[in-house]
Each structure stands twice: as structure tokens, then as C-alpha cells.
Length: 242
Image (cartoon, rainbow, N blue to C red):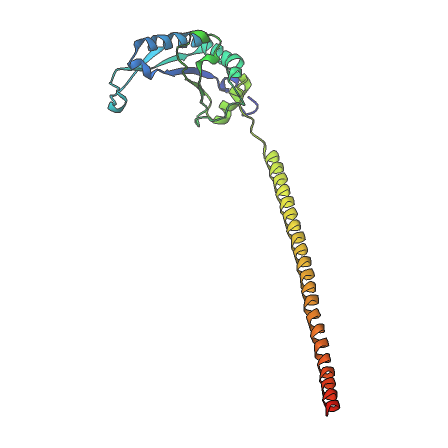
């Protein structure tokens, strides 16, 4: 009441009804499937379901108008609240790898849950199940907005996934930005060190090349200096012979 500024407790939203739907497409070929599914849904909801019939014929699905395609049961009053309590306290915790429900409302405070397996309800005997079937559970509330509907179901104990507050989001973004900056700095430092090592290696190779080039020059100088001596010796030998 205080959260949304209601002036009377009668303004507080409440659960109006809960509708449980089960698709039984295989019933068009085997009527026993429909009976088995109806029995399971009756055990889950505590109330006999109604058969939903096809509204039109669809040749691609081999479906004719009037064929049974699903089951539905609508719970109101105490039965709705009892089912909601069993759903949240017993059935949902038995979902494998459950990590919370997304808060996806329809814009008018109503919420729908998709259940993949009917065996999460303890009323269903696993050994007696002929086929795994899914359920759609629609919770209709008198809430005017999604925020009010979320608050209502949260107070009942619906395990929604917690949304991080703006401060938490900002802190996570800042931490990520700092981590990215540190990675970039480390990458630039490693790149600079690699460049320095390559430059040092190139300098050493250049010095070795200069030394190697200098050695042949010295030998050539020695050979050049020896040539006049050889010529003088030859001239002296010729004069002696004369």
C-alpha cells in the first residue's frame, strides 16, 4: 500500500484467476492420450479440465475443425491461491538447473510461466507417465502495471531473477572498463619490449656486418702495399743480370 501510494487496502492488487493450459496435439490420432492428459491435469490443478477444440481446419497439420487439441482449467478464489502456493513452494524448486524466473509481464500486470515437464508436480507419478507434456500457467491479476504485478507475486514468494540496481550496473561497468584498460596497457608494454629487443638485435647484426666488411679491406691494403716491393725486387734482379 505504501509502496504505490494506495489510499485504501482495497486498491492493492490481487490474483483474479490462474489458467493452466496443456497442449495435446496427439489426441487427434489417439483419444487415449487425451484421457491420460486430462487425468494428469486434474491431479495438478485439483479441478477437472475443459477440452479445447480446433477452431478451423489446417490441412498441413492434418487438423480438422472440432478436433481436440488441448486442455485448460481455470482456478479462482481459494483454489487459485492454493495452486499458486504449491507451484512456488513445491513444483518450481524441482525444475532442473533452475536459476529463477524472468520478470516478463504482459504490460498489464499479468504473468505467464512456461513449464516444460508436468512431472515437476508431486501429484504426478513418474512411472505412470505415458508422455512428457508441457504446461502454460497464466496468472491474471488486478494490477494496473507490471511493477504492481511484480510486487504482488514477489510478496507471494515468486522466485524472480533479481535485477541489478543502477549503482551495481555502474560499478560492474567501471570494473570492466578498468580491466580492459589494464589489458590494453599490458599489450602495449609487451609490444614496446618486443620492438626494443628487435632493434637491439638489428644493431648487433649491423656491427657484425661492419666488422666483416672491414677485414677484407685490410687484407686488400696489405696486398696493395706488397706490390711495389715485388716490383723493386724484380728491377734489381734485372740489373744484376745485365
